[in-house]
Image (cartoon, rainbow, N blue to C red):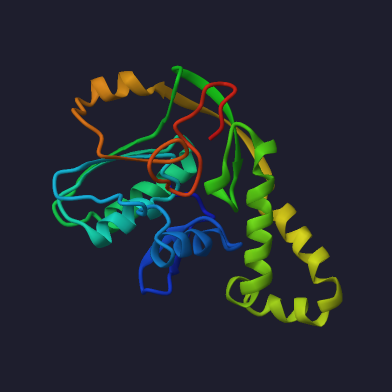
Length: 229
């Protein structure tokens, strides 16, 4: 079920997506994917028939970016957070790609199979994690994004920020606390090797996420209980 907090966004290139964050995370990831192209660098290339694992797929922005640029890919998306997975599947439905084979699974991949405690941030779903203490760098990046592009994200509320310009840093600290309001969810993780076997994946040409060749907006070939996601 798509969560009530989900809403439609139109990104600068005209792409329409369903999103969860109202505090700039979607636009931040957009810039990484569509303007800076940070996930397809250093000679990384894809061709028709290639297989891509998008592990920790979030709301599907990496998958959709591939659908905008390539055809005929085999795309496997993994997202363990239920509300995020619902938005992911809707975005994949809206943007199926040209000749894509898409398989979306409501679990994460890791070194062990089991249920793990995730910290879920509704306003920053791409930062949901099993290790919330490791998200300090993400918080700083989002704060910088709000300070530089606050008008776009906050609309009329940004006028209040301008009126309080001398203390805007403190105001954005409040926004970050709102952004990272946590909820605890117990989510499924499966062993990577068993999933590759069960889905009869013969080869992986690109894996998205931390520890892989590219990323989808958050860490992912994880969760071992002490791993991050």
